[in-house]
Image 1: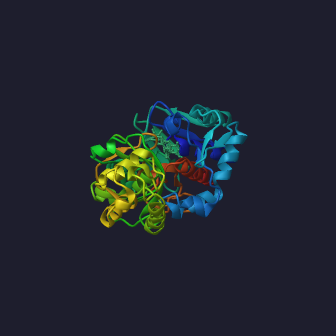
Image 2: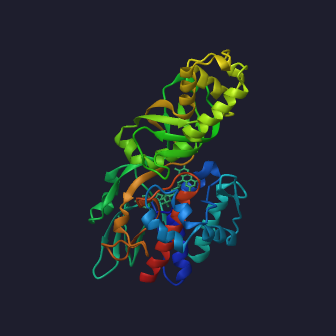
Image 3: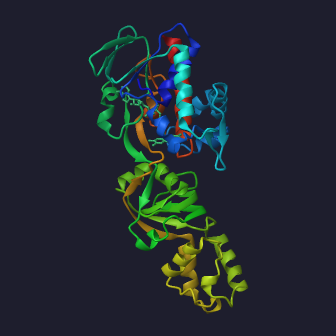
Length: 406
Ligand SMILES: Cc1cc2nc3c(=O)[nH]c(=O)nc-3n(C[C@H](O)[C@H](O)[C@H](O)COP(=O)(O)OP(=O)(O)OC[C@H]3O[C@@H](n4cnc5c(N)ncnc54)[C@H](O)[C@@H]3O)c2cc1C
Protein backbone atom coordinates (compact mmCIF):
# COMPACT_ATOMS: atom_id res chain seq x y z
CA UNK A 1 0.00 0.00 0.00
CA UNK A 2 1.71 3.18 -1.25
CA UNK A 3 4.07 3.82 -4.14
CA UNK A 4 6.53 6.01 -2.26
CA UNK A 5 10.14 5.42 -1.22
CA UNK A 6 9.31 2.74 1.37
CA UNK A 7 6.70 0.98 -0.81
CA UNK A 8 8.99 0.79 -3.83
CA UNK A 9 11.97 -0.40 -1.83
CA UNK A 10 9.83 -3.06 -0.12
CA UNK A 11 8.38 -4.26 -3.44
CA UNK A 12 11.79 -4.38 -5.17
CA UNK A 13 13.37 -6.40 -2.35
CA UNK A 14 10.38 -8.72 -2.02
CA UNK A 15 10.50 -9.52 -5.71
CA UNK A 16 14.31 -9.85 -5.66
CA UNK A 17 14.06 -12.38 -2.82
CA UNK A 18 11.30 -14.43 -4.47
CA UNK A 19 10.97 -13.61 -8.17
CA UNK A 20 8.20 -16.15 -8.72
CA UNK A 21 5.82 -14.40 -6.30
CA UNK A 22 3.41 -11.71 -7.40
CA UNK A 23 4.08 -8.26 -5.93
CA UNK A 24 1.64 -5.40 -6.47
CA UNK A 25 2.00 -1.75 -5.49
CA UNK A 26 -1.30 0.08 -5.04
CA UNK A 27 -0.84 3.85 -5.24
CA UNK A 28 -3.63 6.28 -4.46
CA UNK A 29 -2.43 9.17 -6.62
CA UNK A 30 -1.70 9.11 -10.33
CA UNK A 31 2.01 9.52 -9.76
CA UNK A 32 4.30 7.14 -7.90
CA UNK A 33 7.41 8.35 -6.03
CA UNK A 34 6.09 11.92 -6.03
CA UNK A 35 7.92 12.90 -2.84
CA UNK A 36 11.19 11.45 -4.05
CA UNK A 37 10.82 13.62 -7.16
CA UNK A 38 10.40 16.87 -5.22
CA UNK A 39 12.71 15.96 -2.34
CA UNK A 40 15.83 17.86 -1.39
CA UNK A 41 14.83 20.82 -3.55
CA UNK A 42 14.64 18.53 -6.62
CA UNK A 43 18.03 16.93 -5.87
CA UNK A 44 16.87 14.13 -3.49
CA UNK A 45 18.95 13.86 -0.35
CA UNK A 46 19.04 10.04 -0.54
CA UNK A 47 20.84 9.37 2.75
CA UNK A 48 23.44 10.74 5.16
CA UNK A 49 27.07 9.67 5.16
CA UNK A 50 26.98 8.30 8.71
CA UNK A 51 27.56 4.56 8.61
CA UNK A 52 27.98 4.27 12.41
CA UNK A 53 24.79 2.85 13.93
CA UNK A 54 24.99 4.57 17.32
CA UNK A 55 25.84 7.91 15.70
CA UNK A 56 23.07 7.84 13.09
CA UNK A 57 20.40 6.96 15.67
CA UNK A 58 21.08 10.29 17.39
CA UNK A 59 19.41 12.00 14.42
CA UNK A 60 16.03 10.36 15.04
CA UNK A 61 13.89 11.98 17.74
CA UNK A 62 11.35 9.15 17.50
CA UNK A 63 11.43 5.48 16.52
CA UNK A 64 15.02 4.63 17.48
CA UNK A 65 14.01 1.45 19.32
CA UNK A 66 12.64 0.02 16.08
CA UNK A 67 14.93 1.62 13.55
CA UNK A 68 18.05 0.34 15.31
CA UNK A 69 17.20 -3.17 14.09
CA UNK A 70 16.23 -2.18 10.57
CA UNK A 71 19.46 -0.17 10.23
CA UNK A 72 21.45 -3.22 11.34
CA UNK A 73 19.93 -5.18 8.48
CA UNK A 74 20.00 -2.33 5.96
CA UNK A 75 22.27 0.58 6.88
CA UNK A 76 23.67 3.60 5.09
CA UNK A 77 26.42 1.53 3.42
CA UNK A 78 23.80 -0.85 1.97
CA UNK A 79 21.89 2.12 0.57
CA UNK A 80 24.99 3.65 -1.04
CA UNK A 81 26.08 0.32 -2.54
CA UNK A 82 22.59 -0.58 -3.76
CA UNK A 83 22.12 2.69 -5.59
CA UNK A 84 25.63 2.46 -7.04
CA UNK A 85 24.98 -1.08 -8.25
CA UNK A 86 21.85 0.23 -9.94
CA UNK A 87 23.60 3.08 -11.69
CA UNK A 88 23.08 5.94 -9.20
CA UNK A 89 26.42 7.30 -8.02
CA UNK A 90 26.09 9.33 -4.81
CA UNK A 91 28.27 12.19 -3.59
CA UNK A 92 28.67 13.56 -0.07
CA UNK A 93 28.36 17.27 0.67
CA UNK A 94 30.36 19.00 3.42
CA UNK A 95 27.61 18.52 6.01
CA UNK A 96 27.28 14.76 5.30
CA UNK A 97 24.17 14.87 3.10
CA UNK A 98 24.32 12.52 0.12
CA UNK A 99 22.85 13.34 -3.29
CA UNK A 100 23.06 11.71 -6.72
CA UNK A 101 26.02 13.14 -8.64
CA UNK A 102 23.52 14.35 -11.23
CA UNK A 103 21.97 16.67 -8.58
CA UNK A 104 18.65 15.52 -10.01
CA UNK A 105 16.05 13.48 -8.12
CA UNK A 106 14.81 12.06 -11.45
CA UNK A 107 17.91 9.83 -11.42
CA UNK A 108 16.64 8.18 -8.19
CA UNK A 109 13.03 7.96 -9.39
CA UNK A 110 14.08 6.41 -12.71
CA UNK A 111 16.33 3.91 -10.96
CA UNK A 112 13.52 2.67 -8.68
CA UNK A 113 10.97 2.60 -11.53
CA UNK A 114 13.32 0.75 -13.83
CA UNK A 115 14.32 -1.83 -11.23
CA UNK A 116 10.70 -2.51 -10.21
CA UNK A 117 9.71 -2.90 -13.86
CA UNK A 118 12.69 -5.14 -14.66
CA UNK A 119 11.75 -7.44 -11.78
CA UNK A 120 8.10 -7.55 -12.78
CA UNK A 121 6.58 -5.63 -9.85
CA UNK A 122 3.06 -4.63 -10.84
CA UNK A 123 1.69 -1.21 -10.07
CA UNK A 124 -1.87 0.06 -9.88
CA UNK A 125 -2.21 3.85 -9.68
CA UNK A 126 -5.12 6.27 -9.27
CA UNK A 127 -6.89 4.24 -6.61
CA UNK A 128 -6.09 4.07 -2.94
CA UNK A 129 -6.72 1.28 -0.49
CA UNK A 130 -9.88 2.11 1.43
CA UNK A 131 -9.73 -0.72 3.91
CA UNK A 132 -8.35 -4.17 4.53
CA UNK A 133 -9.63 -7.20 6.39
CA UNK A 134 -7.52 -10.03 7.77
CA UNK A 135 -8.79 -13.39 6.47
CA UNK A 136 -8.84 -16.65 8.37
CA UNK A 137 -6.53 -18.60 8.61
CA UNK A 138 -4.30 -16.10 6.78
CA UNK A 139 -4.18 -13.44 4.10
CA UNK A 140 -6.03 -10.19 3.50
CA UNK A 141 -8.98 -8.85 1.59
CA UNK A 142 -7.99 -5.41 0.34
CA UNK A 143 -10.70 -3.05 -0.88
CA UNK A 144 -9.76 -0.11 -3.08
CA UNK A 145 -11.47 3.28 -3.27
CA UNK A 146 -12.89 2.24 -6.64
CA UNK A 147 -14.50 -0.79 -5.00
CA UNK A 148 -12.11 -3.46 -6.39
CA UNK A 149 -11.29 -6.36 -4.09
CA UNK A 150 -7.81 -7.87 -4.05
CA UNK A 151 -6.82 -10.95 -2.08
CA UNK A 152 -3.23 -11.07 -0.89
CA UNK A 153 -1.22 -13.32 1.38
CA UNK A 154 0.63 -10.45 3.05
CA UNK A 155 0.15 -6.69 3.08
CA UNK A 156 2.75 -3.96 3.61
CA UNK A 157 1.36 -0.60 4.65
CA UNK A 158 3.72 2.09 3.34
CA UNK A 159 1.33 4.96 2.73
CA UNK A 160 3.40 7.69 4.42
CA UNK A 161 2.38 9.94 7.29
CA UNK A 162 -0.89 11.82 7.76
CA UNK A 163 -1.45 15.10 9.58
CA UNK A 164 -4.73 14.04 11.24
CA UNK A 165 -5.44 11.18 13.65
CA UNK A 166 -8.70 10.40 11.83
CA UNK A 167 -6.72 9.50 8.68
CA UNK A 168 -5.23 6.52 10.55
CA UNK A 169 -8.69 5.05 11.24
CA UNK A 170 -8.29 2.28 8.62
CA UNK A 171 -5.43 0.93 10.80
CA UNK A 172 -6.70 2.00 14.24
CA UNK A 173 -9.98 0.13 13.77
CA UNK A 174 -8.00 -3.12 13.92
CA UNK A 175 -6.93 -2.29 17.48
CA UNK A 176 -3.52 -0.91 16.44
CA UNK A 177 -2.30 1.98 18.59
CA UNK A 178 -1.59 5.25 16.84
CA UNK A 179 0.57 7.96 18.34
CA UNK A 180 -1.11 11.31 17.60
CA UNK A 181 0.44 13.04 14.57
CA UNK A 182 2.01 16.47 15.05
CA UNK A 183 4.19 18.47 12.63
CA UNK A 184 7.96 18.15 12.77
CA UNK A 185 10.74 20.05 10.95
CA UNK A 186 9.52 23.63 10.87
CA UNK A 187 10.96 27.10 11.37
CA UNK A 188 10.09 29.62 14.10
CA UNK A 189 7.94 32.70 13.43
CA UNK A 190 9.31 35.64 15.39
CA UNK A 191 7.52 38.97 14.99
CA UNK A 192 10.59 41.17 15.51
CA UNK A 193 11.30 43.74 12.79
CA UNK A 194 14.84 44.35 14.00
CA UNK A 195 15.58 40.62 13.53
CA UNK A 196 13.87 40.53 10.12
CA UNK A 197 16.13 43.35 8.93
CA UNK A 198 18.99 40.81 9.09
CA UNK A 199 17.19 38.48 6.68
CA UNK A 200 19.65 36.23 4.83
CA UNK A 201 22.31 36.33 7.56
CA UNK A 202 23.54 32.83 8.33
CA UNK A 203 25.54 32.19 11.50
CA UNK A 204 27.49 28.91 11.67
CA UNK A 205 28.13 27.00 14.91
CA UNK A 206 25.24 28.34 17.03
CA UNK A 207 23.23 26.66 19.75
CA UNK A 208 19.47 27.01 20.17
CA UNK A 209 17.28 26.22 23.15
CA UNK A 210 13.56 26.57 23.86
CA UNK A 211 13.07 27.96 27.38
CA UNK A 212 11.72 25.32 29.76
CA UNK A 213 12.30 22.35 27.40
CA UNK A 214 15.16 19.95 28.13
CA UNK A 215 14.71 17.06 25.64
CA UNK A 216 17.27 16.18 22.99
CA UNK A 217 20.84 14.89 22.82
CA UNK A 218 22.41 18.04 24.40
CA UNK A 219 19.88 18.53 27.23
CA UNK A 220 17.79 21.11 25.46
CA UNK A 221 20.50 22.76 23.32
CA UNK A 222 20.59 22.12 19.57
CA UNK A 223 23.77 22.87 17.62
CA UNK A 224 24.25 24.00 14.05
CA UNK A 225 23.95 27.00 11.75
CA UNK A 226 21.07 29.46 12.32
CA UNK A 227 19.58 31.36 9.40
CA UNK A 228 17.72 34.65 9.91
CA UNK A 229 14.70 34.89 7.61
CA UNK A 230 12.13 37.57 6.89
CA UNK A 231 9.74 35.82 9.31
CA UNK A 232 12.07 34.62 12.06
CA UNK A 233 14.64 31.91 12.56
CA UNK A 234 15.49 28.85 10.46
CA UNK A 235 18.56 26.72 9.70
CA UNK A 236 19.70 23.28 10.90
CA UNK A 237 19.81 24.13 14.64
CA UNK A 238 16.22 25.44 14.58
CA UNK A 239 14.95 22.50 12.51
CA UNK A 240 16.62 20.08 14.92
CA UNK A 241 14.91 21.81 17.86
CA UNK A 242 11.55 21.66 16.05
CA UNK A 243 11.95 17.90 15.49
CA UNK A 244 13.14 16.90 18.95
CA UNK A 245 10.62 19.16 20.68
CA UNK A 246 7.78 18.54 18.19
CA UNK A 247 5.31 17.32 20.83
CA UNK A 248 6.20 19.88 23.50
CA UNK A 249 6.03 22.75 21.01
CA UNK A 250 2.66 21.52 19.74
CA UNK A 251 1.36 21.37 23.33
CA UNK A 252 2.63 24.95 23.87
CA UNK A 253 0.79 26.05 20.73
CA UNK A 254 4.10 27.25 19.27
CA UNK A 255 4.05 30.18 21.71
CA UNK A 256 7.41 29.92 23.45
CA UNK A 257 10.67 31.75 24.09
CA UNK A 258 13.72 30.66 22.12
CA UNK A 259 17.27 31.37 23.29
CA UNK A 260 20.13 31.56 20.80
CA UNK A 261 23.78 31.19 21.75
CA UNK A 262 25.26 32.88 18.67
CA UNK A 263 28.78 31.98 19.85
CA UNK A 264 27.89 28.29 20.21
CA UNK A 265 30.48 28.02 22.99
CA UNK A 266 28.49 28.47 26.18
CA UNK A 267 28.93 31.09 28.92
CA UNK A 268 32.32 30.15 30.39
CA UNK A 269 34.27 30.02 27.12
CA UNK A 270 32.50 33.03 25.65
CA UNK A 271 33.19 35.13 28.76
CA UNK A 272 36.92 34.37 28.78
CA UNK A 273 37.24 35.07 25.06
CA UNK A 274 35.29 38.32 25.49
CA UNK A 275 37.45 39.38 28.48
CA UNK A 276 40.65 38.82 26.46
CA UNK A 277 39.20 40.78 23.54
CA UNK A 278 38.20 43.68 25.79
CA UNK A 279 41.81 44.00 27.03
CA UNK A 280 43.29 43.86 23.54
CA UNK A 281 40.86 46.37 22.05
CA UNK A 282 40.39 48.72 25.03
CA UNK A 283 41.01 51.85 22.97
CA UNK A 284 38.76 50.88 20.04
CA UNK A 285 35.17 51.81 19.37
CA UNK A 286 33.02 48.85 20.33
CA UNK A 287 31.42 48.89 16.86
CA UNK A 288 34.88 48.23 15.38
CA UNK A 289 35.45 45.14 17.50
CA UNK A 290 33.77 41.80 16.92
CA UNK A 291 35.02 39.34 19.55
CA UNK A 292 33.08 36.35 18.28
CA UNK A 293 33.63 37.03 14.56
CA UNK A 294 29.89 37.37 13.93
CA UNK A 295 28.59 38.66 10.59
CA UNK A 296 28.90 42.47 10.96
CA UNK A 297 25.10 43.01 10.93
CA UNK A 298 24.61 40.52 13.76
CA UNK A 299 27.23 42.26 15.94
CA UNK A 300 25.40 45.55 15.29
CA UNK A 301 22.14 43.88 16.37
CA UNK A 302 23.80 42.63 19.57
CA UNK A 303 24.92 46.19 20.35
CA UNK A 304 21.53 47.76 19.65
CA UNK A 305 19.66 45.09 21.63
CA UNK A 306 22.02 45.76 24.54
CA UNK A 307 21.55 49.54 24.25
CA UNK A 308 25.28 50.05 23.58
CA UNK A 309 26.35 52.68 21.05
CA UNK A 310 28.71 51.51 18.29
CA UNK A 311 30.84 54.62 19.04
CA UNK A 312 31.34 53.81 22.70
CA UNK A 313 35.04 53.17 23.52
CA UNK A 314 35.57 49.66 24.85
CA UNK A 315 37.30 50.76 28.08
CA UNK A 316 34.30 53.03 28.85
CA UNK A 317 31.77 50.17 28.78
CA UNK A 318 30.08 49.77 32.15
CA UNK A 319 30.01 46.37 33.84
CA UNK A 320 26.27 46.31 33.24
CA UNK A 321 26.72 47.00 29.50
CA UNK A 322 29.32 44.24 29.23
CA UNK A 323 27.05 41.73 30.95
CA UNK A 324 24.08 42.71 28.82
CA UNK A 325 26.10 42.38 25.64
CA UNK A 326 27.46 38.98 26.63
CA UNK A 327 23.97 37.84 27.64
CA UNK A 328 22.65 38.78 24.18
CA UNK A 329 25.50 36.89 22.51
CA UNK A 330 24.99 33.68 24.48
CA UNK A 331 21.30 33.72 25.43
CA UNK A 332 19.63 36.02 22.91
CA UNK A 333 15.95 35.64 23.60
CA UNK A 334 13.09 35.88 21.07
CA UNK A 335 9.35 35.31 21.41
CA UNK A 336 8.16 32.61 19.02
CA UNK A 337 4.58 33.08 17.78
CA UNK A 338 3.77 30.19 15.50
CA UNK A 339 5.70 28.14 12.96
CA UNK A 340 6.30 27.98 9.22
CA UNK A 341 6.61 24.73 7.28
CA UNK A 342 10.11 24.05 6.05
CA UNK A 343 9.37 23.58 2.38
CA UNK A 344 12.52 21.67 1.50
CA UNK A 345 11.46 18.75 3.69
CA UNK A 346 8.67 18.21 6.13
CA UNK A 347 7.58 15.11 7.96
CA UNK A 348 4.98 14.08 10.48
CA UNK A 349 5.88 12.95 13.97
CA UNK A 350 3.50 10.24 15.15
CA UNK A 351 1.81 7.31 13.42
CA UNK A 352 1.70 3.57 14.10
CA UNK A 353 3.19 3.08 17.54
CA UNK A 354 6.51 1.18 17.43
CA UNK A 355 5.26 -1.04 20.27
CA UNK A 356 2.86 -2.57 17.72
CA UNK A 357 5.69 -3.70 15.39
CA UNK A 358 8.08 -6.66 15.66
CA UNK A 359 11.55 -5.09 15.41
CA UNK A 360 13.10 -8.07 13.57
CA UNK A 361 10.53 -8.22 10.79
CA UNK A 362 8.42 -5.01 10.73
CA UNK A 363 5.39 -7.28 11.14
CA UNK A 364 2.40 -6.15 13.15
CA UNK A 365 2.38 -8.03 16.47
CA UNK A 366 -1.42 -8.20 16.57
CA UNK A 367 -2.07 -9.11 12.92
CA UNK A 368 0.33 -11.68 11.41
CA UNK A 369 1.07 -11.04 7.74
CA UNK A 370 0.58 -7.28 8.06
CA UNK A 371 3.77 -5.19 7.80
CA UNK A 372 4.60 -1.49 8.13
CA UNK A 373 7.34 0.56 6.45
CA UNK A 374 8.30 4.22 6.17
CA UNK A 375 6.69 7.34 7.54
CA UNK A 376 3.40 5.68 8.57
CA UNK A 377 5.40 4.49 11.60
CA UNK A 378 5.94 6.77 14.62
CA UNK A 379 9.54 7.28 13.53
CA UNK A 380 11.15 10.37 12.05
CA UNK A 381 14.51 12.02 11.66
CA UNK A 382 15.88 15.52 11.33
CA UNK A 383 16.76 16.95 7.90
CA UNK A 384 19.77 15.57 6.07
CA UNK A 385 18.65 12.35 4.35
CA UNK A 386 17.66 10.53 7.55
CA UNK A 387 13.99 10.18 6.62
CA UNK A 388 14.72 8.48 3.32
CA UNK A 389 17.26 6.24 5.04
CA UNK A 390 14.49 5.17 7.45
CA UNK A 391 12.23 4.46 4.45
CA UNK A 392 14.93 2.36 2.68
CA UNK A 393 15.78 0.40 5.86
CA UNK A 394 12.23 -0.37 6.98
CA UNK A 395 11.09 -0.91 3.37
CA UNK A 396 13.85 -3.44 2.77
CA UNK A 397 13.11 -5.36 5.97
CA UNK A 398 9.33 -5.37 5.48
CA UNK A 399 9.75 -6.48 1.85
CA UNK A 400 11.99 -9.47 2.49
CA UNK A 401 10.09 -10.63 5.59
CA UNK A 402 6.66 -10.23 3.99
CA UNK A 403 7.61 -12.29 0.94
CA UNK A 404 9.06 -15.02 3.18
CA UNK A 405 5.61 -15.31 4.75
CA UNK A 406 3.60 -15.31 1.56
C1 LIG B 1 9.04 18.51 0.12
C2 LIG B 1 9.70 17.36 0.81
C3 LIG B 1 11.06 17.13 0.59
C4 LIG B 1 11.69 16.07 1.26
N1 LIG B 1 13.02 15.89 1.05
C5 LIG B 1 13.66 14.87 1.69
C6 LIG B 1 15.04 14.60 1.46
O1 LIG B 1 15.67 15.22 0.60
N2 LIG B 1 15.63 13.61 2.19
C7 LIG B 1 14.94 12.86 3.11
O2 LIG B 1 15.52 11.98 3.74
N3 LIG B 1 13.61 13.07 3.31
C8 LIG B 1 12.96 14.03 2.62
N4 LIG B 1 11.63 14.23 2.82
C9 LIG B 1 10.91 13.28 3.68
C10 LIG B 1 10.65 12.02 2.84
O3 LIG B 1 10.12 12.42 1.59
C11 LIG B 1 9.69 11.06 3.54
O4 LIG B 1 10.18 10.76 4.81
C12 LIG B 1 9.57 9.79 2.69
O5 LIG B 1 9.03 10.12 1.43
C13 LIG B 1 8.66 8.78 3.37
O6 LIG B 1 8.48 7.71 2.47
P1 LIG B 1 7.17 6.82 2.52
O7 LIG B 1 7.27 5.87 1.37
O8 LIG B 1 6.99 6.28 3.87
O9 LIG B 1 5.98 7.83 2.28
P2 LIG B 1 5.60 8.68 0.99
O10 LIG B 1 6.81 9.05 0.23
O11 LIG B 1 4.71 9.75 1.49
O12 LIG B 1 4.78 7.66 0.09
C14 LIG B 1 3.54 7.16 0.48
C15 LIG B 1 2.69 6.91 -0.74
O13 LIG B 1 1.49 6.27 -0.34
C16 LIG B 1 0.42 6.82 -1.07
N5 LIG B 1 -0.83 6.60 -0.33
C17 LIG B 1 -1.37 7.31 0.68
N6 LIG B 1 -2.54 6.79 1.07
C18 LIG B 1 -2.76 5.71 0.29
C19 LIG B 1 -3.80 4.77 0.20
N7 LIG B 1 -4.89 4.84 0.97
N8 LIG B 1 -3.70 3.77 -0.70
C20 LIG B 1 -2.62 3.69 -1.53
N9 LIG B 1 -1.61 4.58 -1.50
C21 LIG B 1 -1.67 5.57 -0.59
C22 LIG B 1 0.78 8.27 -1.23
O14 LIG B 1 0.10 8.86 -2.31
C23 LIG B 1 2.29 8.18 -1.47
O15 LIG B 1 2.62 8.07 -2.81
C24 LIG B 1 10.97 15.25 2.16
C25 LIG B 1 9.60 15.48 2.36
C26 LIG B 1 8.98 16.51 1.69
C27 LIG B 1 7.51 16.74 1.92
